[in-house]
Image (cartoon, rainbow, N blue to C red):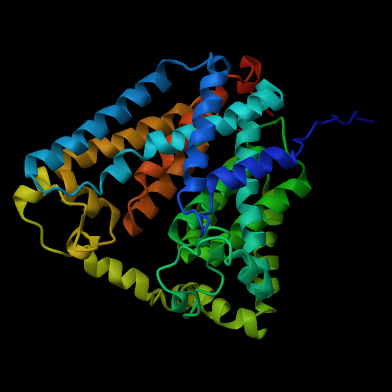
Length: 420
């Protein structure tokens, strides 16, 4: 009789989970709008200063990442100055790395002090994903029990352009404790899907249990369905890639995995006639059904993106940009296409550098999981077409790469399916 391997799965600390939820998605008080924003950056900054010795394993690659981010920030300022546009809205993008890195490093610092250092990378991915499951649960509570939503937003700001937006077709479930939830949330739910797959199947250590995996995976997929249909498609692609890669010699397991989406579809189909779910179900499922049946998604959002991608841009703008990111209250030339926003602001040279920054960050994970790099690159390439997201990846990967430095050397051989 074979001895069963006793595994120690990751444990959930309510305190750490609360800190992830609060600092990743800080709400704003109606009475004092800036108070919690100041708290959300002030506390992490001070905590890191006090506990900076925790980060004694920051390596050369992380230092180069910081220098790269500084260079892009200076290049952003230079583009604005040379074109004399006076449009400093792009600084929100070019300073994003520093603002978010402070928060993620703070959260990592808490993990390092409260859990085993050698599991810090696992815990960081775990809490990142679990935060979005909690956000999805919050969405369900707000929509299904309106009194909770009314009470919450009598205290906190509902960050949404108009109340009617949440009542429009397909937007019923785009709401969380921070207000309107959309494109960024489905991006983060998709990243969480990748982290969850890795935690259960990317390492022989299997740091999470089967139940933990199902809660995280299904919760994040549901988040995709609530906050953006593109996330459903991209999450499916990266999941299929992982299943085929990890189980290329195990046909039975591939069949088992394939049964999971069938169960999800049957469960969702049962909700299509429930009044509160019916509009959302049609919004979420129609493009997918159209794509499978006719080859054309017939998606108005995607059609608008195609129109936006065909705008005429002068050669001088393509080369050097115009130094505008926003103008007259909307994105310059009114385009949502991510790579076009980049080119319009600082031209091809700046765009190439910004994308190299993203790629450089992703390759920080090469010792832990080559598959994860491919998955995140797929997510980046698809989402960047729908809107600029290149700057979302580096701060997350920066913190994760620091946590990776605490992994024991012998554990790296057991990662990414390299060991049976």
